[in-house]
Length: 203
Image 1 (tube, rainbow, N blue to C red):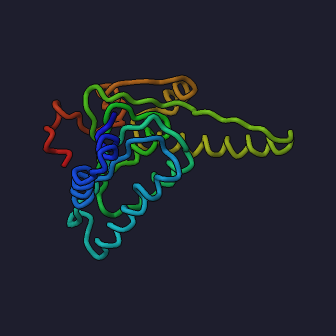
Image 2 (image 1 turned 60 degrees about the horizontal axis):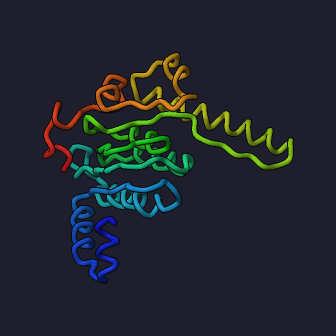
Image 3 (image 1 turned 90 degrees about the vertical axis):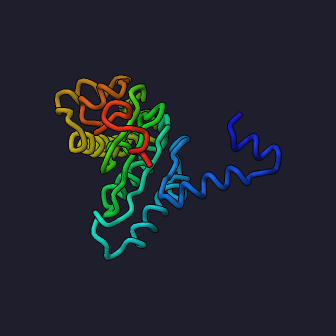
């Protein structure tokens, strides 16, 4: 049982609320779940709000935003909305990969202006799942759209990492897992905690 569940059981959320409030006050967002429509309320609106608060300041004069990511993925379309917001943010956004950064979460992670992980952080890049139940003509239309989506995901990876198009094409249609050291080699992360920086770097 996690800390929040324990506190919910005891009807005392004081400690949990205090910790989360402290994180938000320091512009730290926590993405620790399946990626779904809650992403708008959990991350996107805060990034928009803090960019508005920083309006008129140069990027170097703004207090950075940090996103802690531990997610097995989820809705890739919603994930790409967060990718767009991160890329458009003038306020610097640092992402920290914790435990598992998979599928749609992988696309969010590589959008970070600065990307940090632990040595044993696990990354997963793959082509995701698609289920189509419709008439033949509509299914064909859907597949054409999915092809365009796949091309956008590919362009995002190629522009955000050191992966070549050939490497990407050879790995994207498999369950491509790798750890922090390989993530650094592929240009997925900039720093590994314990090797390139200390824990203090993520706050």
